[in-house]
Length: 174
Image (cartoon, rainbow, N blue to C red; front, side, top):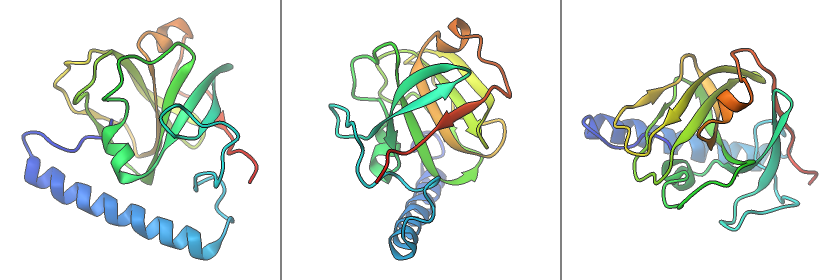
């Protein structure tokens, strides 16, 4: 889940407000400009929707398919997987962030361990493996990224995920 509170609460609040404004601006721009930004905008309607109401798309990571819920709204970016009891094997959550920049995530409210995969330009640029639900750290992307994939803990080791591995996904047809 996206970082949003902690020791630097005021600073994080200011950053969160900036990110929310950026998201809202992007929504307005996409609505005005139409579907010309298919790689950036969320699908208007997904063929599949999760039990939580999020679009489900296949994300291919080094030849392994993960059915990922796509989240991009400020509330869903903030909440992430926190309220859930578990994440089934083969499932994940793809965070579509408003801008390609250094991202901060945390395990606030989590109930199970995760692997986080930082994604830039269709490639793995880093990961955080086996992050415990009570891990107090702020997890920071190694480079600016626009996408983060959260998967069940152990995924990266099981599938031998490495930096520069290919990641691909496609929005469903509109």
